[in-house]
Image 1 (cartoon, rainbow, N blue to C red):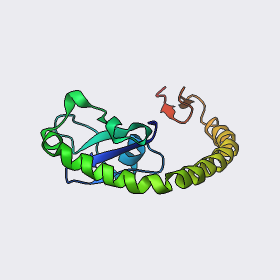
Image 2: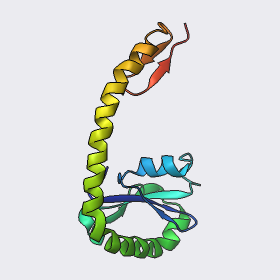
Image 3: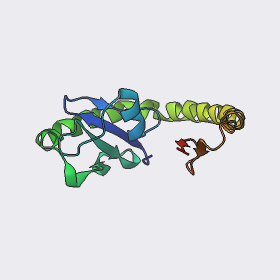
Length: 139
């Protein structure tokens, strides 16, 4: 997560973002394929502290040529978006924080019940260190 805003710009000119300010959440929700650096269809961008002077690309060493040719266009789009977003962002952040608190409490109740069910498949599934992924063991 970045300090103020993060999003994705796509080869077809879209600027995508979520209330979570997470590149990976944008990629997941929009079903973008995050595979080849050279031929990718999107670029991760961030703006720290709400200041366009702090606009930057996460992957500067591997920028596709389509982004380099249109960087000013994307910069202008993000600047316009942030002008409008700055007005409502505090309210959005507050309701998102409330949602996360409720979601986390519900998940805390769900997780041990789920784990108990999976433990019934002894020797086949193992909870990873990330805590939310299961690994299949072939034994």
